[in-house]
Length: 99
Image 1 (cartoon, rainbow, N blue to C red):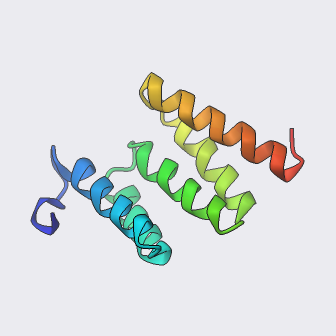
Image 2: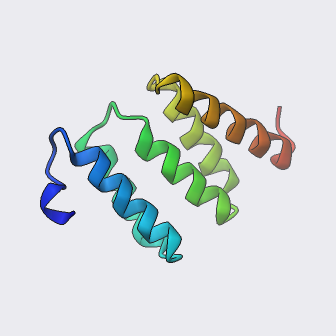
């Protein structure tokens, strides 16, 4: 997977797999670090924002998670992903008491 993590056609898929593994093994700081690298490598990709929002929400960094979900929406994700982002954002806004 590391070899595939050079910006190109498989970069997003390879990095997403690494992020998912880091999350699965509760290596959340590592997952966020990978998301930050991913954002820099592919700034128009909404997925690293989506993943970082989820990690931040699980760590109760609610304002940062809300900001990342909103950024991911601004980057025009695919429709199925957009629906997941909107649902997660709505739940988080309700939890945070924001509307």
